[in-house]
Structure formats: structure tokens, C-alpha cells
Image (cartoon, rainbow, N blue to C red; front, side):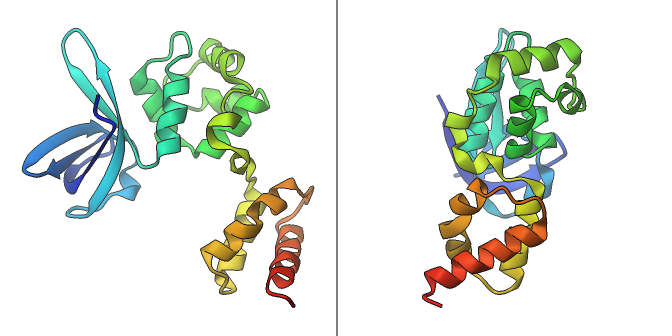
Length: 192
């Protein structure tokens, strides 16, 4: 089983990437072309799918995407291509939030997902993806914007990560509230 491949990006499209690893080109189904640039060396986490007529590699930029993909393909009637396209279309936290909230409309906006498949995804996976990714799954848009705001104010990623779990637990309604609380927490940590 091929778990990951590290190599240079030889070519890519909206649906695949070819990684050059020691002179061998691996064709990987990969639906996140915005993360790629020619000649760059990257690591892609892979799932090796065996069919009667071929062996196919599906790739992901992060290990938790691969973990979620493996949960998705356990859903009755959901194949690896559709699961991979879903993860290429939305962020993991958005997908998990939709599943946890039973948001059929959100899931139906994904490629090749109809009402029955959306309902099956919710039925099979509700409550099962939180353990895959932990509490950081539930970062809403307001919190994401506040985190970006803290970065623009000059705070480093490690400083922000040290308070993220506390911010997630707060019941803030706006970006401004999250930003204010984040500044208070960072100020406490720096002894101010």
C-alpha cells in the first residue's frame, strides 16, 4: 500500500498531479490544483484503490483529509472518485459541520451527490468524523476571520495555535468578538 509520495510536481490539471519521485512519475487523482505549482517538491498522502481494470491513486495535501476520505468511502454508494471530488470542493471543517448539522442542501452542492447520497452520508458519518480531526474541526467563518486578523496584527502561528482551542469553546457571534477575546488571551499569555 502506498501511504504517501514525496516528489516534484511534473505536471498537473484540475483533476490530477504527476509527481516525479526519483525518476518515476506517479499519476495521482488530486482535486486541489490551487495548492500546486510546477517544479515544487511536496508530499501527497495517498489512497491506493484497486479496480478490475486498474490501480488508482487518490491524493490529499493533509493526513486528516485522507482520514476523512476513508470514512467517506465507507458510506454505501459513495465511491472514491466522488469522495475525492467532495474534499476538493470544500474544506474539511465545512464538510464535517454540514454532516453534524444534517445539512442536506450543502452536501447536494457537492459533485455527484444527490438527496439520497447526502442523507446516507449524514446517517453513516454523523458523530464519527469528530474523532478523526479533533475539536479544531468546528472553526466557523467568524473565528477563521478573527485568526486571520490576529495574523495581520503580527501574531505568529504558534501563538495563535496556543489559544485556538480556548477560542473554539467560546460562544462568540461575530468576528469582532472573537478578535477581542483572542487579544485578551494572547495578552494574558504574554504576561500583559
